[in-house]
Image (cartoon, rainbow, N blue to C red; front, side):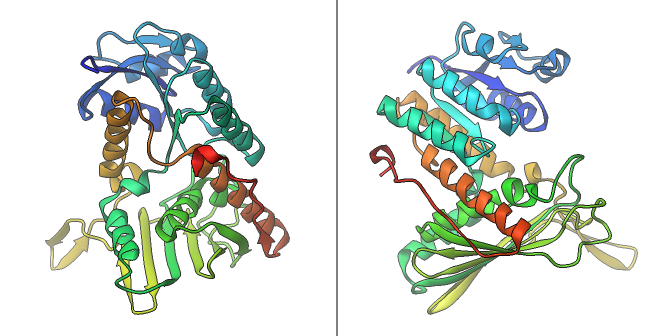
Length: 337
């Protein structure tokens, strides 16, 4: 494909606007062809200075706009299923931000719709697979140098939660990244979830169960624990330590600038996921553009989006009941074998 890949971006909020900037200024081989957002003014603000972009308030109008070859979905989760199915109906390849859908039933419908096409069109935006540290850890575990992985210890902290953030969303939104990362790093499905609730932080909004401690079991007997704390107040931190039979490996240690002044030293802590994982987002979108231009779709699949949704729902059930909840996945279609 000699010409630039024309991308319709659905959603012009925090994530969508960043992807519009990325496609216009960072990624090679692509251009922003159309943008859709219910807020027309927000969509127009996101494309200021970018030529040749049509702006829409309707998703399907953007998909049908001239020059659209592919779709990047960055709208809120409840809008993803309809957008994915509309893209499939037009044969358009898609990069869909997580979650793939807002529930496992919708995820199953999307996966089954794609399987009926007999070819992959969707790539799900689990960008940690493109982070340099995560990729190094994956290569180390796959090499077998440290023996069989026994445990993963994970930390996921945010400065504060946005308005409307619920206790369930600590799992369905925040921990969904750890769900995919654990499945990918270990090469195993997660088979059960237990969620423990310590006393909530005084910094958490009233009624929000924050922090939480999530324990996953895997098909081959490993354990994965996640501390998720979305109102820690001081920074955005993501860490992971793999404990194996013959050693351990840890990623996510702070390597930011340290400022020394006034008789003391202060290490800067990232305040946002778009800062911590900026390179991973860049690599993810570039990889997607490159694969689509080669007429292939690679990376996390609709099966991965479906599996994450099922595990997250089991986690929400455990949060509500306090019980250990098994994960029950549908049979895996041959398309995703």
